Length: 96
Image (cartoon, rainbow, N blue to C red; front, side):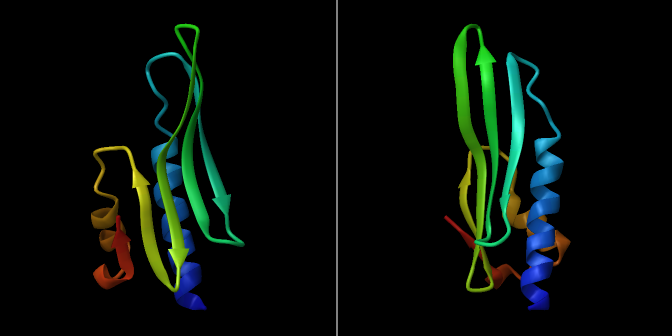
């Protein structure tokens, strides 16, 4: 159980850090969505730019079977490498 708690903490820290960077364009909010019961974690952009609706997931990470699954990464950030630097074993990261 300690491993799962540690992985939850790492994922939340990582996503919280990247969610703090707001886009320089439009009126866009960056939201973190943490479902700690089912182990689903996301960063979502919501708002408006030039009268156009903006909505999209930029990062989606799940924890399944004591492994961290990078389900979606629409950024240039190497999430897997950052997780390894935080202490996650490489074999515990599934990068889709």
